[in-house]
Length: 282
Image: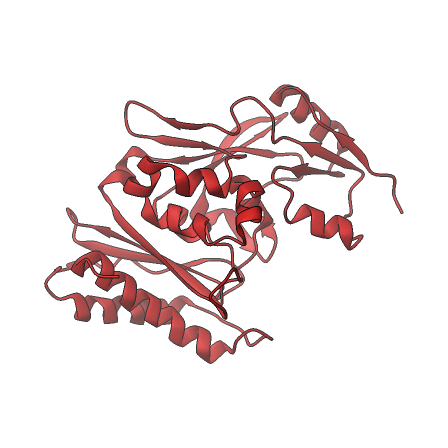
């Protein structure tokens, strides 16, 4: 077994230097809820753990005067759904965070960690995708922003390079004109992984709907934009969005659900969320 070193750098600059020197053999610890499982199972191909949770600014929620929202990568799930302004402006994000694991997990698990872990059933990605959010990635080469929509490449694979650290998630000010909703289908009433989850964004000004669906493909999938939406025709546009969703999902059979069931639930969530957004009913 390779010797595993743990470092808790005092600054982002020091963290970046550690990642750079490790030449791809370092992993980032934010909340650690997924990393601890890999450690337990001896399934960690790394020689260094870089703990970023206490880095200055990474646990902060910052609203710019323009309305742009910057969420530090180490902001926890609990911080998200207990923040009144986030709940009001971005309910799809808050509701997704509130159903991640148990209370103990939500108190520790971080937004950046949830996204970079890239599980197909992650509950925060659909809401961020329909909001047009970006992930901020930092390395010795500099800083770059990547759209959440294109960040995920496959199961547990993203555009983040091995030496990069996700430091923030940025939601543009323009997203505040959107109305959003999130839904999740799971096996039990308590905490459980999503069989299917989805977020839908409705732009009342433009008359458009768009959905992002998780746990129905190796990565979250996004529907084309549905235009000409009339809020008086809730059922019609719920069915139209569901049809678009069925064109893009690629579910599989596994021990938790069949592909057929996941397809049906993807359509159901789209119809249900459109009803909530256009008709005001959950």
